[in-house]
Each structure stands twice: as C-alpha cells, then as structure tokens.
Amino acid sequence: MFKGLHHIGIAVHDLDESVKKYEQIFQGKIKLRHTAEDHWLRLVFIEVGGVMFELLQPLSPGKGYIGEFLDKHGEGLHHLAFNVENVKSSLAELKKMGVKLRDEKPRFREAGFLIAFISPDETNNVPWELLQPAPPIS
Image 1: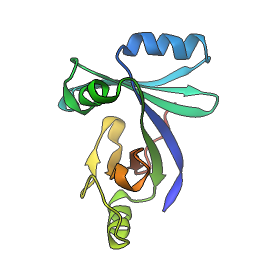
Image 2 (image 1 turned 120 degrees about the vertical axis):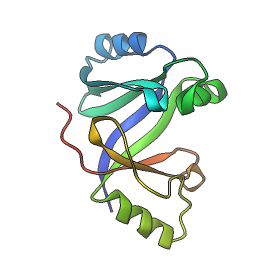
Image 3 (image 1 turned 90 degrees about the horizontal axis):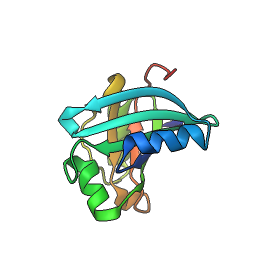
Image 4 (image 1 turned 30 degrees about the vertical axis):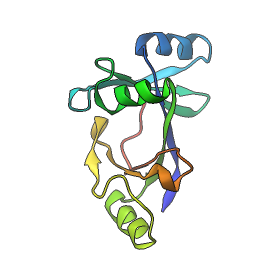
C-alpha cells in the first residue's frame, strides 16, 4: 500500500523567512510554490538532500488548519506524506483493518494531488497523509 515517503510537512509562521533558511543553510531547491485560498494557506515544496519538505504558512494568523495548528503547537512537524497507488482504495483497506481515518474520502490538493489523512491517534500523534501518484515535482 505505502510506496515510500513523498514529503515532510512543516508548519511555519513566516514562509519567506523559512524558505531563505532552507535555501541558504541547507542548499534547498524550490520545486513548487502554491497558494490554496480554500485552505487558507501558502506553501512551498523545497528539496533538501533528496528529501522533499512542504513548508506551510496560513494566509492569516490563526486561520485554517495550519493557523490553528500553529496557535496550538507552534512551528514544527505537521505531517508525513506517503505515496500510495490509489488513495480511495487505500482508505477502504485501512478502514477494513479498523484504522481510524481523519478523511473518509480523498480530496484534491495543490498540483493536482489526491490526498487523505489517517487519524493521528493511529500514528503516535504524527498525522500521515496518503498521496496518490502525482507528476514529479521538478
């Protein structure tokens, strides 16, 4: 079911400042910038040493799930995203095994990704995102 790690999601207060750090300190390369107004966030995918990071900033403090996350937990690890062949069938399989899901149905996200989340109760309080194959970020 799981085909490998796609990216690590990190919630940040200042996206531009965080991108500068990842570029200057870690020689990160920006692969995608996106604003998802329907989710109240801006994001950047940045590659560091072959690992993809998704930096997430709310459009307004406290707004959307990233704003709420930052208010409650501060900056830091938000989720791990795993490639799966088919999000819908993966959700059905996990549900059949009795795994609690945060999302019962997949939804579309930036760059055409189809995603869904497992309940963090199942993954030691680190949300896992299922991500259907998407075009490579380059």
